Image (cartoon, rainbow, N blue to C red; front, side, top):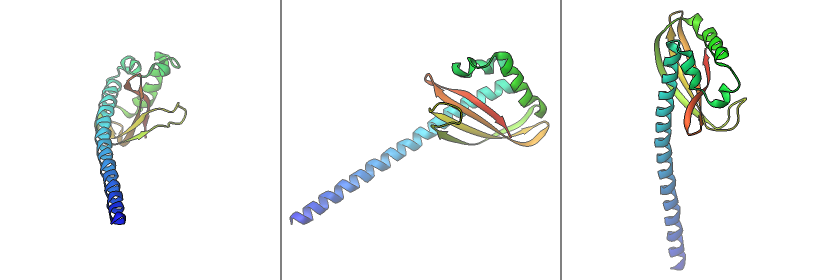
Amino acid sequence: MKRTFVFFAGLCLLLFQACATHRSVSESKSEKRDREKETRAVAMHWLELVDAGKYAEAYQEEPERLRAATTEAQFRRSMEGRRAPFGRVLSRKFIGAAFTRKLTGSPDGHYESILFRTSFEHKAVAAERVILAHESGQWRVVDYRVY
């Protein structure tokens, strides 16, 4: 009788842990969805500034640590060099997002990489990657690439 009780008590504990684990996974999925929604909105806002040639405003959206390392003029030249050859944006579609705590050349932190399929005036099929970092309580763009 004691063995049966111990067996069922152990089984109940295992099932309870499984339910608790399932609940935390569900919360993680919800948190992931919320984070992706937030970071995608920040990335889109930043891309719209760049699309409009509002480089000074886009520069101000970067983290302070990056602004301390480059001037606004350097940022402007860099963005003009990256974007001008492609022409204006014809379409942009969200492809996906990935979260990481490590980013080459950056301190460990909270990073989200957002990928878009973009069609430009002079490049029909391209990919844009916007990487954001969560610093000082908000998401900010730390890197941008066109492939």
